Length: 63
Image 1 (cartoon, rainbow, N blue to C red):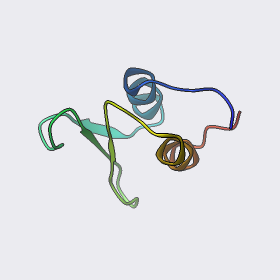
Image 2: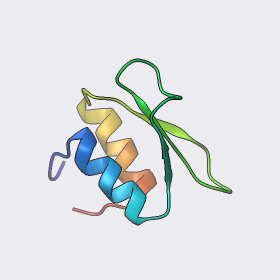
Image 3: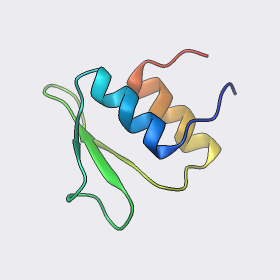
Image 4: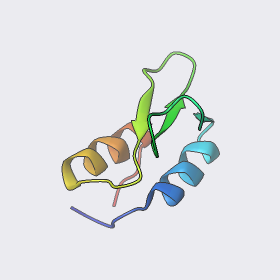
């Protein structure tokens, strides 16, 4: 599976890769990551294994 990332770490990585983080558009503790030409996706506070793998793939994290 690789390294586990927290919501805070994923937000930092997403911002470094030019994703726009909208904290007010998410539901509850979720934030929404969006980028021109890409489909937006939520980054929740509590991240399960399958969702983490999907988010890492979307952000291009290989570990």
